[in-house]
Image 1: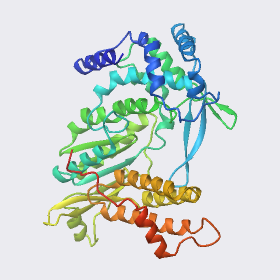
Image 2: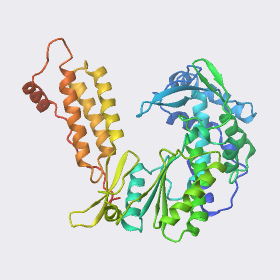
Image 3: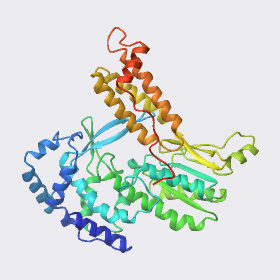
Image 4: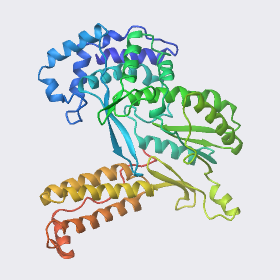
Length: 433
């Protein structure tokens, strides 16, 4: 099956106008079994309450019945269970949990559609793509600001991107390279499957529900036609100076050489968004002077420093190297830092009664995860601050494991010699591979 998918990807890459009209037959028992093996058994269950283990008890029979429903076109996805996940800003993000059998079909669909569209995505897109990370997006942005003629930044936020994707446009964009009506019908059924929250059913007339295997890919295809392809084919040729785009999921940053180009783009992109049923969040979308001359120019206007902007959890700011050359640097954003400390505190309060060795192992795993993401060039100070906050919280909450204080500071230090905390480390260079 992997060979067939690779062949489709190669065909899609070679032929810009290709349209796949017969791919539904790939939704067979072999692919569905492969998807079943890949799915995690730890994920939450959907409205039917069936887990991976329970589905596996009669796996062969279940898969054969599933294939039969797919072949006869009688397969209909169940509504997803919607839960609200807390966000860093105190609000919640809706997450959809499909039943297990729907997860299998979604993943199979994703593999087929991804083979067609992944080779077509432009290099400026970094979210939800195989072997590409957010650090790659940060590296690209760093290169564009330091090595290209970037003087202006368009920092954009799309309002409720996943929730407001037009089903009509989703089907149009998928239909550019997919002519198999059976695949299109199945995708449409997933889009229209509906939501159940607190026992109440709700139709899904718009949007791609976050949490499924298919929605990130649909969001990328939508972004490809709505923004990235349009930017390089329509916007860039009209600009007088250099301009480039970096997109990660529903966030994007555009680098411009000239102010007149960024102003023109602002008018164009708002009209483009409206055409696709979307809009930019006005309170979070900004145009700012940023680059080699930004600090100097701000100084002439009696302002101390150039403005900063946040992207992918980092605050990006204009600075200089030790030799005095212009550098764009980054640090953990205040919002993300506060959220990560808060999340660690909430976890520690619940986990503090664990055996000390087990607790410290888990703490170090959390530190490692933090360093691997935020341990990036120029961010040493902020990951050290996070380490210090973790140390202080440990001292406080280990002393609340019982009514009496478990540690004075000297005993706490002795404990840390026995179970040392993982030291901060830079794992990612913005100048490396």
